[in-house]
Length: 486
Image (cartoon, rainbow, N blue to C red):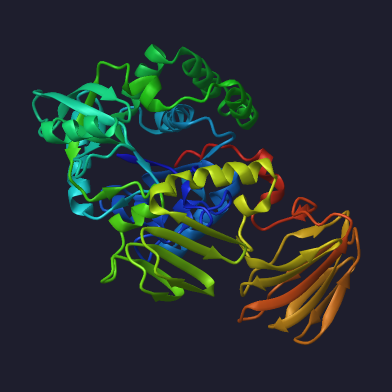
């Protein structure tokens, strides 16, 4: 069996904690681990780590790899399938199936989301095992969540007759998929006992899935055939990018599951939540005696049934009810629980304004450490940079800015043009515009510096990488598909 974990989403309804470059799956929600770490941890009892693949975009692949290495150890570089463009789930899963088809066409492909929470992992694994049995018989199986309330925010699956083939137990044919219902309809679904929430988790045989793509999605099938022919030619990365650029954005639910005659469902009572908004924290986090979920530096007086989160600054709340308050260093959200789903509209407005607040946090993590923007204005930006022991930034230059570095802790090994030298605490150095330079920490404690940038343009894309330990200067040359196992 192979796990394919979809991890390319942006989690806009969890803004301002979730950002384009630090989406929900990278956050710690409902546990000590991040959601992507929780997702991988849940499947490792069933699937070898070499058979776990993360489907995501290049922008966050490095952060996911770092988190997996921190949690599970070793390198995860060969566990990534990189989408050249976000084109919804059908093209992403098609690309994943192309890779798995090279390894094991008859293998079982388990499709999971990286940003879901599950309270009962044992029951979850039992559901996957039941689904795998049906998948071996040619079914495309989805996990249907037993509804605990009349939810209007999810699509539903109506279960039909039980699958009767030998070796299959607890699996039912799908009678139909239905869109998000209104409240009375959702209440009727709950009473009937035949309807389940559509979780977006699937189990099928690789070859079966590709057959159904050919049958129901001819444009995607043609694109996947082009990719298959290009593999090994040296042009596979370019071919994948070109194919994705012209594919329509389509979900696997609409493109395959709602059309196939092979759809089946496993009823799953596993304590599932898609953690789709701030109010969903109630499903994965303990409340206090007043029904509040409070995290961080908060003083609360008399508020009830509210979500209050403070990242760094003190947040004081008085007499709130059914409210959401989320404070981060550069943005604050205040809304009623009833309107929590509308946070996405805030993100849409930020995109229209080309505002950075939907893209990154003040603190940005890199493979070598992190940096925090302390202040910025016309022609200047001030950062705190932390370089991990033994790590170094890329050998690089900037066309539009100079930099002053002041060492706070640790010792910096600096490459500045043709010179190499140490800079100790309370010492500084100057990097002119267009100078080839590098910052390295050869010590055993974190290196912390204050960087003052000055220039006509201070964007992060004014970096020309000449050499990099993390291959960021050669990303366009990387194949989106992992190498075949040896």
